[in-house]
Length: 395
Image (cartoon, rainbow, N blue to C red; front, side, top):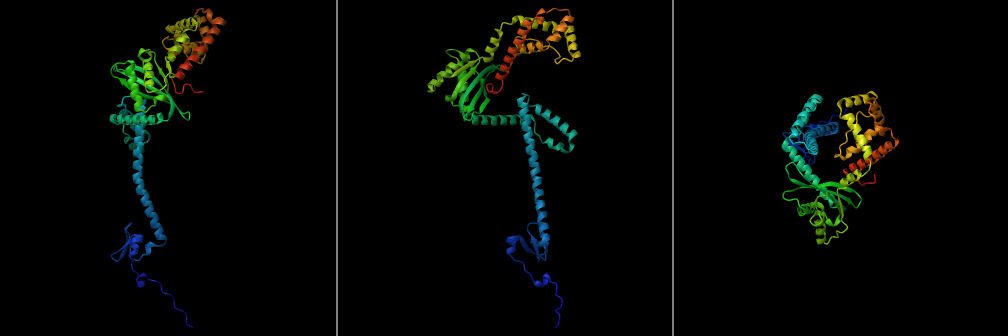
């Protein structure tokens, strides 16, 4: 029996393969000059061998890497540009917060560029993209202001009750400015405390003028005056005048709008009243001793230098006494507290100076001093809390 001969190797040219038009739609191939051409990668192959198997997978991975690389070339500059814009906004916010001139932006950028060239020279060009010129700072701050106003308007729409605090002052251009603060609470007991606005009073500053400005601001922010529970002002006649003060006129306006205003709570000069009340505490004997002793030590140059050196030698916790200034309400408590904490050191120093202060050795006087320190410290804490956010929280 004859053995079969060896099989012949297949050849593409002997198989008479033909390009099929359907491949153009399915695989993006075309027949050009007796060759198959890929419309995507522009490669040519007369024998169809590069379109199957492992070579096809490698080509596919290569094309994917090229696509990712091309996308990264566009994404990276966009990310850098967005980051530079974000930094510009943050610096503009700080300039506005610190009340700095808009021209400071150029100076800040120079400082940033110097630091970048010294610390990370490979990334120095990125910092050059940060726009901080005067006009840009102005636009950024206006944009931030507009965004804050929009957020505030959205919050005021969901508050259940609110109170207002108003204060009038004269700026450096002799223009009267009315500051309006709002404190409200939502249905979920979320507390809102913000500056509602600062409005200029171009003409007179009578109660009716302030009322018109206030009503205009409430209208622009969609505040429902039926939810108004209280008003805090200073003690000026234009604010609390019996006949033509702001509060009186505001109550009349609410009544005209059929809003019950008899329960509208009115406050004025809370901190002023508390400060005046503290003056009624009969401890002038203690204050007189403290003030005279502090003045003896601090108002004389030699005594002051020797006392500070004495505190330094004994490694005292405090390095000096504090002056008492009557017009600065908080200084009384701070002066008394520091004096009490240094009472032993003060006694030793006065003995060396041969100055006799018998009150500092009297137990009753020292008890009065300690009590006065506690009271004034409490008043200082109250004053500070009244000037901060959420002063009446349980904390």
